[in-house]
Length: 568
Image (cartoon, rainbow, N blue to C red; front, side, top):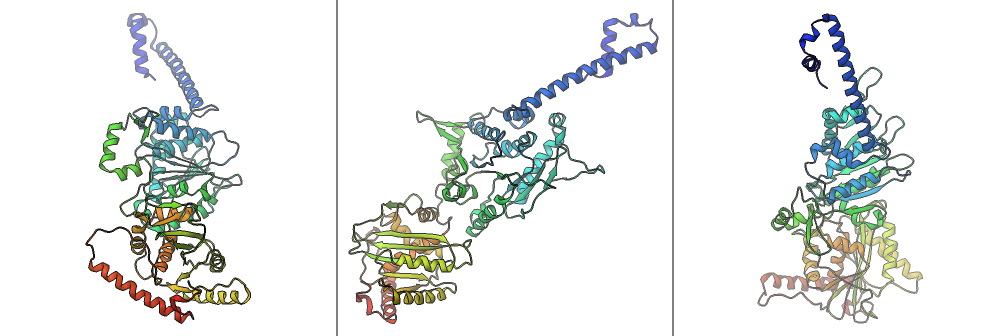
């Protein structure tokens, strides 16, 4: 609005000072004030019209999130939106106007494409102002990261003059004493009554509420750090926390959940949700890429104004794996993922009969007290007449020890196994002894007796190195094949060492059982000529010693050595 001094100068310049000299100063002052008031009223009326129009276009009944972004947060976006931002904007727009139908969605978005600004900053405010959300919780990999997202919202609500003028309900709420209810980096309450909390993964989150209000949305942005995905135990704890604590929040009608992430590793939170069809198959899951391909096979950038295609292609050439993960959201194999893309599969059964086959069943135990413990794996391996190893049985579950015994008894009756091995590490010997007694009791009353050797398997070396050394050459050379319906085993081996290792561990033990049986000849991966190294000689000696130990073990168990007909 123009100043009082400028208004008076305009009046004087139009009428001239000579024409005003005949009026007393008091009269002139009253006239000036009246003109100023009328002008101020016109300006205020114009401002109110603009405010009303902008509010209606941004958050009214037909308000558009796109307008809200451009009008109030144009300082964040110096270039037009690309296909990736437009897709995210449409997703946020679609959250409004639903009939109490909670949304569960994941969006993998490219690093540097405005994910957090569009969704966590602007999207959260827009959904609050449209009364879609009243009590969202922002969750990130750590509490500090989540507080950083919330601080960005606080900054805009304090410094964005146009936003505050149009939406005074975004100011801090005051209590009856005139004191701020809560306005800090971890918890804010708006004058309009909405509240936002910031939490990190694994933080206490149960029982969060404000008076009668419970959380109605979880916005999970960048849930992982590099150090998290490097630890299998950390990722197990994070997924348990997500399932048991975070996703169980909310009132009677449910909870909106949005997970926005960039694929930093195959086992990151977002990727586990994206690939687990059994648990999260009902979620709306999408991946967006920095470079897409049109119908003619030509590549194009999904935000060309900010990231030109040439710049993205140069980045891809310099670091293809990093580009694939953080720009394309494709979990390509890292250097230590030696199985990814190499696994061959077949349709079960591999042959009409099991004549001339050697079959071994291996068990990787998890002796937790409930179904929420780690996985246990019962894996069967067969050596065919062609010299190749085939995975012929796979049962990977979370279960109690009694359930493992039950499922193992069933597995022993499915195929004509030659031997069964049970892991005996970490004070697990008692399971083997008890299971042998169970088999003995079973054989007293059953016509289909279980007569194969049930031996203990001791694993003392490093698990990852043992699995890699034993299985990778076989998989890479096509000498170890998995069934085409063994999805969990395939995922664990394909993403090894980032996924759970229970399946690959039991698979290695099954292959080892067959290799250590006397008289077994399996095909070997091709080696370079004249490579009869000292290590290979040492390995042959080791196999000879293990074969003798196996013969001795069979005799201790009451069998007549490897030629006992109950084994062969």
